[in-house]
Length: 135
Image (cartoon, rainbow, N blue to C red):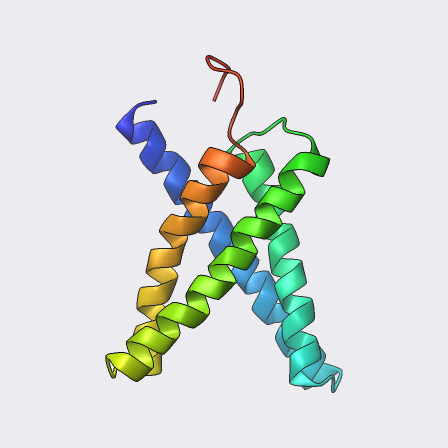
């Protein structure tokens, strides 16, 4: 795969992630501000919606995967769950050990995890098992 094609796919992945984040926050705000739900319920529901958006759009628009949902979805969720653990560890390191402001720490964490999520999903979640298939 050419470097330009890889870059385009990575940028599509980042754009899909941004859409998933918008969906997450929109539902969070709707539930908490308009419906009076507790913040934890709104955050959890938003996380689930963001994950669904990211999975569906990544599958269709970024990786154009034909892997069965029964195989791809658990892989996607494991990559996401691992990313959540990395988020906790990196935030602890950046804020507590290095003394970074939490927003700077979150920005750095998000940038690093964008790479993690892209690699995990490109190589494992949606990657092709048969060499030579169209990508």
